[in-house]
Amino acid sequence: MNHLAVITAYLGGVKDKFLTYQPDRDLSEKLALASRIDQADGVELCYPADFGDFARLKELLRRFDLTVSSINFRSRRSGTWMRGSFSSELPEERREVTDDLKRAMDRSQEIGCRLVTSCPLNDGSDAPFDIDYTKAFDYAAESLGRACDSNRQVRVSLEYKVSEPKTRCLFGNAGETLSFCHLSGIENLGVTLDFGHSTLAHERPAQSAVMLSKAGKLFHIHLNDNDNRSDWDLIPGSHHLWEFIEFFYTLKKLGEQDRWVAFDVMPKEIDPVQNFGTVMSTTRKLEEITARIDADSMEKLLRERNPALTVSYLYSLI
Image (tube, rainbow, N blue to C red):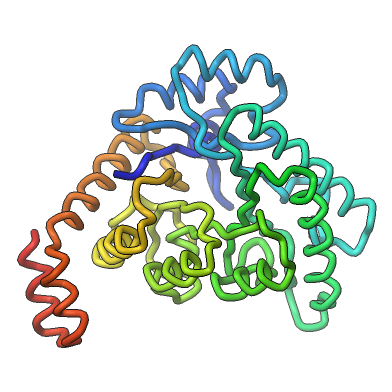
């Protein structure tokens, strides 16, 4: 059974382009909420937001008995690195983000999770001839290489997304992010598969999981859902029921189950404890349905590739 973590950013003030849905909460308030979420096993902390006072952070984690699954390093920040972080044309900006990533990696080792995930959303372009792609990939490889070389005991995981805020992000899908990891030759650099970002990129998340796992680069997983039109960060299974079942079934086949997964889900105006409680229970239900699949029967169906038989079998499970 997977271990379930809540990303702390979604326990404080959350907003979209139009509305603010929750009040700002300090670190103590956010971790107190996390401790009340039924079936949650831990948290994914956000850097730098949660690390202003590291001693206090560690004390709060002990007080609320919370395990840290990973650290979410924010490489896009208002007022800085506006034209990219790891791939910025400016050497001083690349040094800044690299040095800050090193600090996050050291903190992750001190906490004991040894995994830093980052979604470099502001690395990319808005239009043709807006960026030198060769330089951008070279700069990103240089920046991430320097950070990863500084502490080989910590893994760094790139979370891909096709767009937003850039109209085309530099790391937009599983294949190109995996290719970048291989081309850069950085051993402790891998990929975060965000289920919603995968479907937005018109992927089958299970297929992407196989590719990343076989390459030894499936470092982390985020779960959420959407309608394939925008990154809504909805409750898992609200739109892609069978894709989630296939995803969990595939993770089990790959030996990638019983791992940490984190939830990138926006509660909007709903009580975060209630919303994430439903996130947890729904995920456990999806795992339960997946466990009903008889492996021999499914493997036979996969060999036959007859959708009439497969769909009939799947609906017999519920």
